[in-house]
Length: 211
Image (cartoon, rainbow, N blue to C red):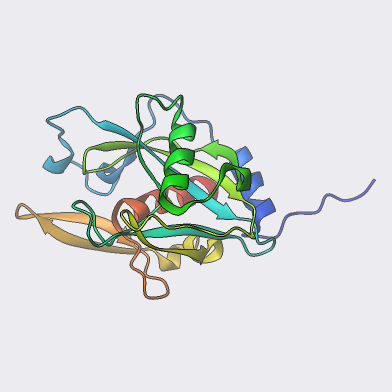
């Protein structure tokens, strides 16, 4: 009987196995910015949360997988210039969060569904900006070409999964919000500042898959 070979850490194969083995999500699971800011008044929503979905696209480079991220256009009214996962609001015509994430990804960066394999989902992430975000996990076949929607995205780039899943690269920072301190994670890489909700989702991914 042949010995079972353990996938190389931070490879696409290892990531897929970790997603398959991740703890089951329960209705009572509570993930989001409030975990880093317990009791903060910003999380006391006056309006109902808006539903959104993002794609967490892990590019299958074999032993050294990467995560594809975007830099939002500087001309956008909200969250301009911030690093983000491709995604957006779930429309009434979207049959599922997965469908919304795939649609938004194609609209923003031109990455087609033929290159994407959905492999799972993370529990919803509640953002201080008033969104309930469904993070959709996917493997992406390399060799793709992107067409960026200049109205929404200024750039797209890949970050090694090894870097993002290393807690040594997760720095806690804060800023003032209505005279109160608001805490968040940031993970600077290659001249890009990964912070806020995007970094919060990455941190949650690390906590669930790489304990």
